[in-house]
Amino acid sequence: MSRTAVIKRSGQRATELFNEAKLLNSIQAACLSVRTPIGEAETIAKNVSRHLSLWLAERPEVTSEDLRRKATETLEIYQPDAAYLYKHHRLVI
Amino acid sequence: MSKKVTFDYDLIVIGTGAGGSAAATIAARAGQKVAVVEADAFGGDSPNWSDVPTKALLHAAHLYDEARHGARFGLRSATLGYNYPSLRAWKDLAVKRTGAAGNRRYYENENIATYHGYAHFITPNEITVNRRHISAKHFLIATGSHWVAPNIQGLKDVGYLTPRTILEALRPPKSLYIIGGGSVGIEIAQLMAIFGTKVYIAEIASRLLPHEDEEVGTLMERTLKEQKGVTSLTQTRTLAVVKDGMGKRVTYARGGTQKTMRVDEVLIATGRVPTVDLGLENASVAYTPKGIEVNEFLQTSARHIFAAGDVLGNHCHTHTAILESRVVANNLLHKNKLTPNYAATPRLTFSNPTIASVGLSEDDCIKRDLPINKAVAPLNIIARSNTSDFRDGFVKLISDKKGRLLGGTIVAPAAAEMIHEIALAIKYDMTAAELADTPHAFLSWSEAIRVAAAKLS
Image 1 (cartoon, rainbow over the protein chains, first blue to last red):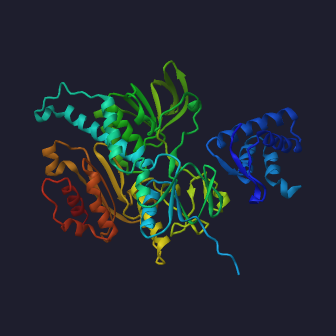
Image 2 (image 1 turned 60 degrees about the horizontal axis):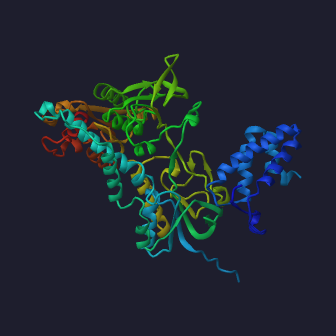
Image 3 (image 1 turned 180 degrees about the horizontal axis):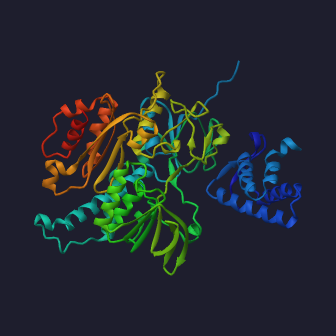
């Protein structure tokens, strides 16, 4: 598990450590929302998480927006529809 | 009444290479409160990993090569040899002596605060370095560029060398496949070939050094083949690399057919990409994978943030980065803003013979549909060629129809020194006739410039 700190949006909430499970769940939820089969959604979430962990390895601190942007970039390779939803979910929901 | 915003520093410079150090020093000497952030070795790429160590090794290599071929001057060189660990020690000494390499204390002596770690923007005026938040009124992004491997099947799995990592090799490989026949690829090819490596250079373009004029690429291909046994594979696309015992097997396509060859190592020299992954979105700085976008004053889309050097994606030269860094320092400190003038920026390849060019190349003029005159003076028509027994090379000058110099290319042993005369002429709008009228010392290589200028005038 990466020990990168994540600065929350607008800096209003306290900074917390990167939580991989939280990322996996959010990616999986985005995939399931565009009717991706559950097994495939799990695989995609793991792949995105692996990419992101590599990126975070040399960064002690990032913002939650950075995480969202990087996760979206990677998700776009595997499931573009889910990536769109993930990118805009605050506006869509 | 609104609260006045205070920052930790007046200026934070991200990157301590050529693009950052000049501005940081000038600003600090002008009384600004300055900090620098470095993720790698202080001093940046040029003194630590590229220009200085490569040129130190090339100097030793050319000396060895000259001595080996000294029999024609009456020198006995049959027992000449080299010790590679000693050569590496010489390279390390040259790096250490620059004063810039790894030198954090230099900045501290200049009253500049230093931070070691990755800088990441979290707001337009704040970065985080090792979870420490520091703010500044202005920023200069000078993060440089890094080598990137082309998308070739299996390359990342089997591993590869870069022009940086090959300098740390314990001994030269027996055979080396270089992907990319540009300036750096040529320098490494010649360096390794002198120390006995069988070198292959694969270049996708129809000639080596595709950014230089055609005769330069043709001459270097011939020189490398005849004198160093280097095999140039032009119009070649590398398709795949797989492990083959202790070495690697490379598959490439050339002339419509696929071929394979076994080599000890593969080196990538296909180009560098700007280092832009530092949370620029959080600072509203516009960029593309090709570099950060700046206006003529080197300001990014966030006007308080400047950028200089390789990170702009324009030129990958240390002297260009220094020029830009000085411009940024001026624009930060003075109301009278400057713009960098790239017209007389030399481009160099430290091969033997050295290749130097400045201004427009013939290809540039053709692309721009400029009516030009050109003249070529081969080195073998001047007296120095006779006394040095060196005949390959030339000076080529390009002027407009009124004789005003637009560009020049030199392939000669002292081209790196000779090119500045042409650069000066281009910068100050001189004509070929004025250059030809200037006395050039007998038995200097520069006589070839006078001959070429006289042909043009």
